[in-house]
Image (cartoon, rainbow, N blue to C red; front, top):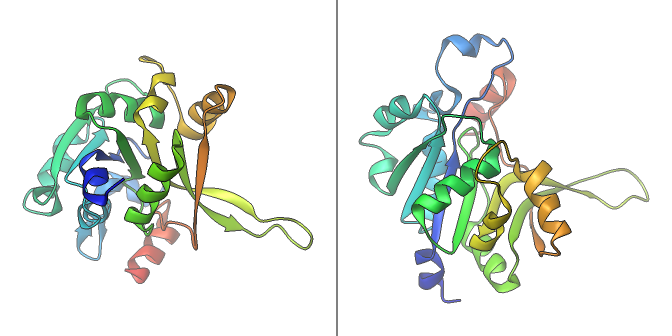
Length: 218
């Protein structure tokens, strides 16, 4: 598919729901998507990645923090990309949130990332492979060594591309995860699941140590 047509058929979805800090002092600072990294809210990196890759519209899936996120992003990268905020009142899980946002946004393909991450995946190459493969889902994964004589383990990086038809298997209500629920359901339905190998994990803020590491990297 021509790159312009591919991009015009694709919407971005940023998962920015509740992220428990596991009794970290960060609980007193801000919701994780809004913690500052190099003087920018963390979620801004996901939106900038989508925008710089040519994605014109995105949905931010959040919960009670939607107003705070919108206020923080005012005048920033959210002004360079058409952003819709989808508030998840009941816990829906990653796949449930993606389904709800996708049905609101419309489109053929949906590229999904996490608001607590700084995506480093080549977006156009990922979309090109997904479109050419005809897969229902493409998982961006890095290789993790398992020792002598064992083939490397493919570990999901948290970045996915979903074709519209994949979301037909996501229930309209209830909690549905991508890795634990949607991917097994697609496999049972004999739908193709493709892997896009990336050279390294996607940096994510999970705790104080990873927060410091991500700041140092940026």
